[in-house]
View 1 (cartoon, one colour):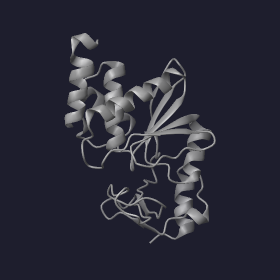
View 2: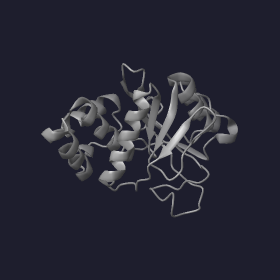
View 3: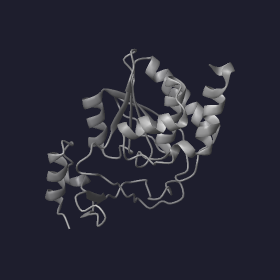
View 4: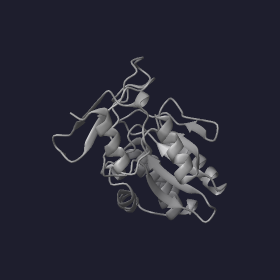
Length: 221
């Protein structure tokens, strides 16, 4: 089992922002299936693992961090100056500081029922249930909001809990709309930018619905 100093050194060596002792996870261990990846389990106020944020008052969430990987991913940079990023919930103040200082992000788009707005960051929440394909109106609203912010030249960070499913679904739909991609092409593009995403996002019903309505239909081109 890794001690707190070992955990901090692992993150520092990977180029991550140093975490203060007060925010150090309660447990840290190596995954049996992936022994070279440090896995942490963190207590975070207001969160509960497995998509139970709104159904439990227990301040618990599992936060998985791979020591050899960036925890956030840059998806696109636009001529307007806007930038789109994807990743896990920025639950620690140090994570939010890193995003603002290193990437210039000024907008958080959350799929959780809690946002992480701060003095230099505005946040908008589009709540979605984990492991469940979201409804089309929610995805449409999220994509439209992202478009507005990017057109204004802002940096946008889209997140769910782990940056793999719910947030990936939104970003795939944004890619399809902005670059006229098929679901499969958007999945392949996103997988190169962020290998951690779920491999079946392109097969989700809401993704196919979004494609048919906003990309495939000639009236919407």
